[in-house]
Length: 309
Image (cartoon, rainbow, N blue to C red; front, side, top):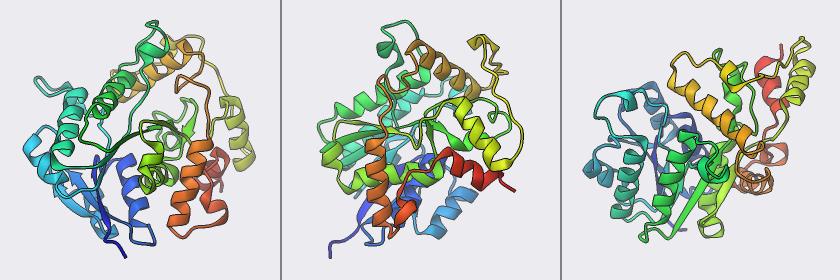
């Protein structure tokens, strides 16, 4: 039996990183070990990952030497840069792209062979310059930078859709978008699936979504599950979405603007759930799951879990 491969996660205590860590740690064959990079090892998120079996490494994405040490001995890495981090607004603080390049360079220097990045398409290229969603373009820049590093054997992008979990956040619950990803249930499994066979997906952008469903149909699912009346009111203009100066809401607004300008193509192409379904099945089976547990979560099932009495 071969020894477990070490996967180091940058952004481990965030929603995506936590999902990836828990999925990998659930591998029944013990194929992976997980090292979680965090700025605060004493946080509840870091403690929960420790209890789940992850190794914790204290490091900051702005410090390259620490990041090289964090990636030492790693076969693979998952990286998610946080474009909504309030620290990005501080004077002199590195940008998301700056941090992404530091982390990628550190992983390459440390000898990481396989890297999965939570990236996006270029909104500017997709819309032929008509619209720029900076959040998408920043992540696209980092993803392309990673792909340019010859030290890596494979570079894969697993691009998350709109979080189903946003329906649980009061400030975001009324803002519908598509396609949807169940971060907790599915996103980590998609990355896990890629790391089971990274060469198969090398250079690809995986459309990381659980279900693509129109807002009106999603609303009908909510009514069926809860027995409560609800309504969907389309916004007449992007300017109707108030952001109140919140970085996260500004991101959401820009993403909606991009989707309008791209004709609804969140990934620049028509939505295709087949690769995500295959990855989900592979990762779920590697965790000893079967039946419906190997399938992507539908928004109806999500609503049933969180809103049905």
